[in-house]
Figure (tube, rainbow, N blue to C red):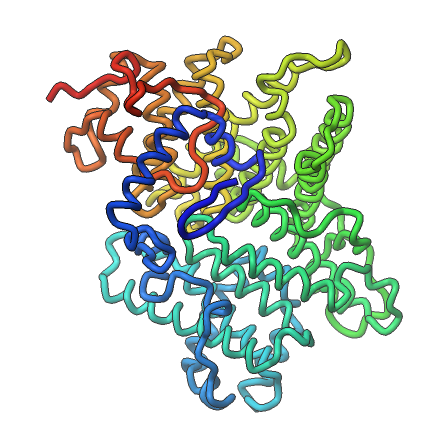
Length: 565
């Protein structure tokens, strides 16, 4: 728990900042730094003074806060909102991009053939559909723009134009929700809200508390509208609507697990609170026409509209079981932990074959969307292993039945595999890579899990409990530090992580590591002392490592390699 001048913040023990926060001496050191900075310039660090780096490029022209929570100006009329739509041929391109580039988002919120009929009807008669349907359309356009692949060489005016459009369409989405009295529920409301939350998630580089509050609204909307109960309980819900409700609820579950975990908070939905079944492996075309009953699912060897969502739901329901155990205030035994370990491993084995992890060299004929899905699912599995086994990473055996060696090995392997995925994404999302068009999908949630894995490796290296894999850990941390350093200008979390990794590597690597730290990305020489002491640690900082400081708060000379230049 952190108490500050501008906010109080709690994060659970699985959060990367909490792992760091257990390094008591470093925590004290950076707490003193933060205190002196706040005394020196309090306005600079207040929540009302938000840095441009809080928001990624396409959000910089807008406020750093979630628009729905901070007083979006209401539209004066429905006509004003409709007037903001570009010509149909432009909207056509956005809608096409939405369905092809945002396949997982699209499949979870709309049934393609039904939407197409509504879409054509809207252009024939704009008054025919509800204001929340128009909000859904604006949210699709906004997400399509976010997914636009602008190269680094794109002219500035193109980027500025895209930024303005994203801000405008986000505003119109919120205005439609407000005009449609979204808290009352209704048709298209939850689907539009899901897209809106994803918009806010995409336009922020780091974890934002606003997103968690939006998630709370989303979850309560879904429950209030009965999405947590399977449609089979309600005879007035037809097969198509029922299956789409299952997809939407699966998306709510996924969002809860990811965003709550990112904020270091328990899930809002526990597995005991819902009985909505898993969606079937069906294409949208399987649900066309007047169907009296739901067709059987296709084999899971066949990639369909809903296969990715099914896989995400399976692994994240298992993560929910992990979170339920680790966030419980009641103590739990190693035996209980191993039961959840079995559930997690079973979920990983039940990932459909097309989405099972395989080497990049064996994926050259696969679509970028499929490759990203594999990386994400594997990453979530490793995240679950770290969450589950971290408690026993440095613990002594409490019982002869315990096997902490298994937990240590599992935790280390999961952290190293997470770092390998980070390296793959860093390389393949660059221009010319297999995932270049997917670079926008590497957001704060995936980066949060990379931070957690990084801090696990830092803790093991500092405590000299590396299971004989010192070089593997050092190599992974060097790669992670390089990535965090490149991203530190846009992400305060990356900046924090880079400083922590630099410190741990400097202590462990000796003179060899000094040369690695001499050049920043611009080619300028940089001293490690500047790297370490220039950190801006705000929420939780270092924990499980226990670095020692001199009485004055500085690092002892033996701990730091100075830049002699």
